[in-house]
Image 1: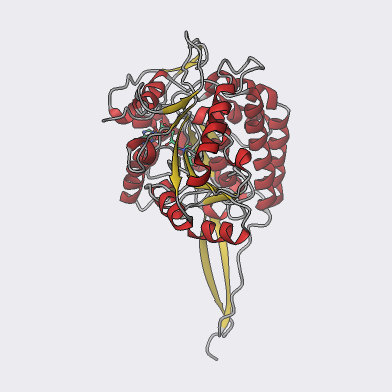
Image 2: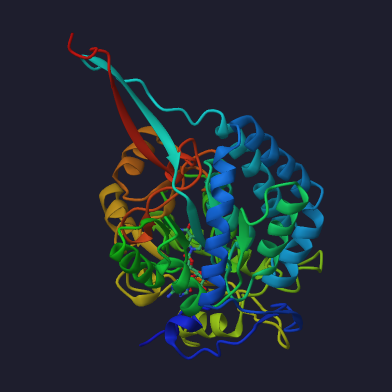
Length: 471
Ligand code: NAD
């Protein structure tokens, strides 16, 4: 069976109307905004402006760059409610989540500002002289963001890059350009130099490709589907352009029989953001002796999920981003598939009920491919080795959880599973001060964490001879 491509990828299919971007409220289908789409010439102009701005930015004293970024954080802080409201309208996020997202952007700015004055090189002992290294900015960095967490993901690419002395041109997803545009306005309000952080809404196949192909762009940070990421990597390879890729996931939640089963089988480990989360634990792997108990728990929990407009305080799960995404998710869930199911509204809006598929084989499309909606598969395992084998039985390796009260087992399993972000007795994945990224087809490189700024630098090594000229 073929599955429609993820929403937000009309460019990749070649079937899109490449006109202005119409931003819809996914809970109501009302038009929130119509935004002009940048073409290749606009990208070229933006890169030229960014190149000049970067030279001036890198020449500022580190203290001054840090101070401006802290001021930017303060400005974002005073606009958290406004940014969150925008995220609710353009992406259908719950208000609490959206506030967290705006706060995440603010906090990352402060964290990155703290790195500006600590971006030091090393002194390495060598005979006959001194050897020192420098971390130099790359120049102009292109950031391409997806629609699922528009604000934090834009920030994760852009803010450490700015802190490391680069300029940034950001292309948000077609469906969700508004928070990124507002973040760029707030940067100017805070006093960041003009053209240092530019946001260019546009189509992936036009503005995205133009940014990737532009010789004036030193690095691309791409977050999105593995399919598009592969193309981005190929195009970057033509210029040996630096690239960080944050791609898809199909993450396991490994539940051993001795675990706190209710906490382990929390349906919001795969329903948060309506399942449109690259770290969603969509493969619930359960030791066979507690399979029925976990299934019963999930059935009760799914029935209690309130799917609806995010602005209704009773809502616990919002809409999907688009009709196209609903169709894609539906293609993995035939009406007669054995499953546990919650409810969803009728009428306008892009809805899909929370679902756990119970009759899938581990090698089925639903068990191996990223669905990117509120759908998980429940699969039994026998023992530790079987759990590890199943956990790794996808092309991805982004995140995952291990639930057990046996510390030794928790350590063995987390060491064995091939994924970039694991949690033990927890479903958390992302903190701006710890590294984030994927193994295998989930990506290349890492964002965030102590090395976030270094990823936007080149290392220069300089040897200084202490042996004077021959007498
Ligand atoms: P997508 O690949 O369709 O689009 C992502 C971005 O790339 C958009 O801005 C789009 O316009 C642009 N784009 C599309 N075609 C392009 C091209 N040919 N050249 C350059 N840019 C192009 O992904 P999506 O549907 O917007 O996002 C969902 C995907 O993102 C999921 O697979 C999800 O797992 C992944 N994701 C990964 C992470 C992570 O950190 N690993 C985080 C969030 C989302």
